[in-house]
Image (cartoon, rainbow, N blue to C red):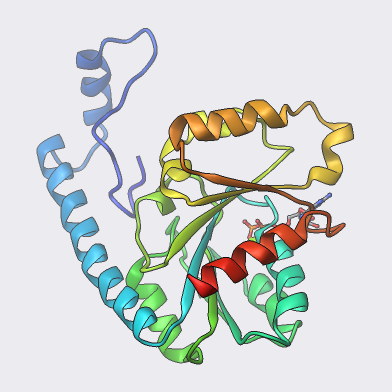
Length: 250
Ligand SMILES: Nc1nc2c(ncn2[C@@H]2O[C@H](COP(=O)(O)OP(=O)(O)OP(=O)(O)O)[C@@H](O)[C@H]2O)c(=O)[nH]1
Ligand SMILES: [Mg+2]
């Protein structure tokens, strides 16, 4: 489990090991009894949800469209954002919150496009939480009627549980990761409104079944929208920009 966020689900299953036995071996390493772990998890998430609701009200009041970009490390979130901002920022006011364990690399990449960005370093933490976004947004002070992109820490697990007050989660999955990822990490794809299938320029070089990936995503979330694109070649970008425009008008 993840010791920094207390996001153990209490659903541990090890193939071929009865749940009774797997719980015994798991519990031996825990600092708290399972019941207490669940209580702590609920406390953490309830507190987070409270701050997320505050963020959401603030964004609604200022007509800020906040999007939470989630993915595994290296799927292309920052590349997609810089490509997006290059096309969008002259027309729409944008700002970015960047989440990573360490470095300001990604915020530097965003700022190089001329768009304000603030880096949040989570240290040992594996996700952004609503308080971090609240504090970062306080410094960023996004304009009314603007777009706020939040790039979460690269991690397909914990960011699924932490509401930041965003309008939508956008899951970025690249074609080098395998089409089974929506089934292996269902919570993330269930929580996302849109799946961006990135790096389609690499499809000729990898074994990746696009149709089966989309079917897998729809199995865990029948409503999920899908856009295939390449953040580096720009193929499919117009669909993503149209989706953003649609959300801004919604
Ligand atoms: N071929 C190809 N490479 C891409 C594409 N998008 C991103 N990349 C490359 O993938 C690597 C990771 O891209 P990033 O944008 O840093 O990924 P990220 O999701 O922001 O990574 P983290 O912030 O570390 O989680 C870089 O080498 C990018 O150039 C794409 O559409 N096609
Ligand atoms: Mg990044």
